[in-house]
Image (cartoon, rainbow, N blue to C red; front, side):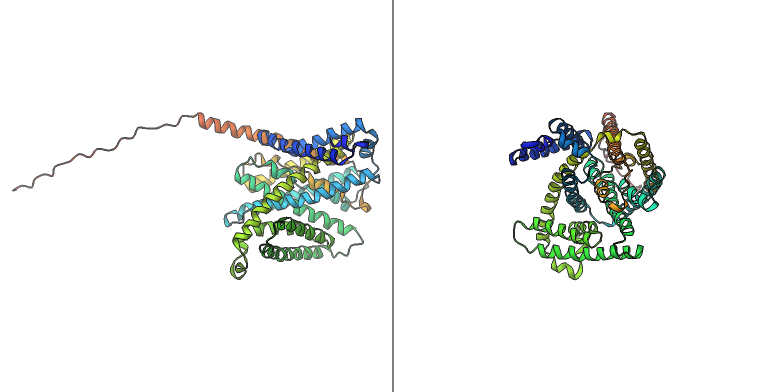
Length: 450
């Protein structure tokens, strides 16, 4: 539909409305199919984008040729890349906020949160290290620092794919994946921009110490901003205050990026503060909180982030699918490099999960999708370190295969769970008829002499 709309004279407001509406309706349908089959809806959206690209190739070959070509300076190519980055950034903020609003910080959840953090941390850095070694070996023109920059996007879990896909798992596994993928997103973005800052001579960096200082500053600013937003917005009576709040968060995120901070931390901390107000508003600061009004903000924000994340995720992955060039997958070298990276991803996950969670590691081992963050960061690699010989097919292989593997793992787990439940229901439960004990009156023996 979008491909037809973009073609020639069919670009009109009504056709755009029709196209966008059809895509949103299809996305909702894909979500319902995903609930029944455990096939991630984002894979269906990517496939829809690929189909639209093929349609575009038949109705407007000149536009399709520009999209599928290597000329990054063309107007259409630039517009698509900018649109993808803009939608992806907003989507990332909404998805992290949506995840944070779901998380409860309780004493009994401290250990699961710590385990998820350690697995995300270990998985990220080990995956970056091995992927960098593979890329450096196959692309000799890459130095160590450049290889690490290219390896980082390939090593970050996609919360945009994982979070909506694990809703069918039991509560503990679902929470683990929400925590792990969110931590992986934030840590991966921090590592990526730390690496690019070290290479970019124009940046005033002071090594790891300067980076750590920026992280600490981000955390302090995040708590100050979070408390201020909650206290101020609970007293605003306008019905449009929730979109105003979203605008403030987007503004803080963009300003934080300008100052090379880690603004995704701000989004996460704000979400945690407003979803755990009883924990963060204690003592003297508690008197500033109107629990009823703050709870209304939380409930409204929860609905808005859920709906916005759905729409943004829809268009991001459809546009990403449109930009996929299938011919880039037809290379033995690309397939080999991708296979080595994919094998390392699952081996690392298997080892880490066995160490930190024990034997129950299905389907967690195979839930390692790459997606939104991978694409966003890849487009953000500085021009000064871009390697012309690097094949984008590697990116596509890793994203598509990790999504497919997760799909089969989720389907297998659903069938396994269904069989276990069916077996339990079919097994007869033994019972025994209960009888109330009878009480017989026993006459007391007469004492002698009476």
